[in-house]
Image (cartoon, rainbow, N blue to C red; front, side, top):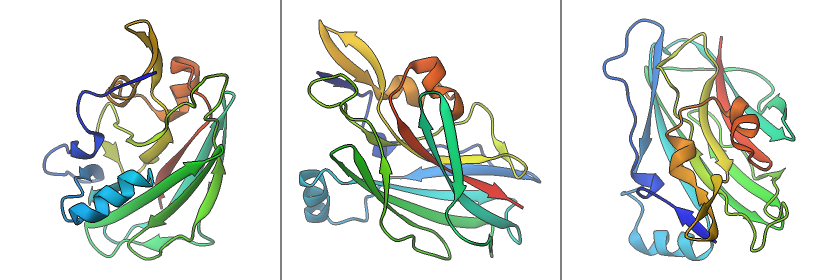
Length: 203
């Protein structure tokens, strides 16, 4: 099995310039501020980390964080909090920390107003493959900038696109990331196994 990277997925930063009215952009932040010993421990424990900054015309707007579980072409969505929060500025930071074991994802999310407790979700690392299929926290890049009326996809816990590379099964994460396709379409278009993604809905 091979994993195809063009570069480490933590190094990616995406933005769309100065935001206009109703526009929202996401920057994915490299974890340079984390001590190297901590990063080594996270790597040893196979813990994934993703930090992002939400910029734009969001001040005063209420938001809800949603989890979306994609399985066999169907998506089940639910809000993670009992009520909506309000952005107090034009910039907000979200952090996702994830680890999987035995087809179960354990994930924590830290938001501007609330830290979500450890929550478990079903994934499918085996899905007929040996060794198990690798999953990562992946950026969900849109084809065009978001607006405040869009559902804003933040991050997915997913495999890459399965390919044959030098005679071996391989997983192309960059091919999925840079396809800039809505995660709602990933299973139909790329034949991915079960995965989870998180999104913001503004009011």
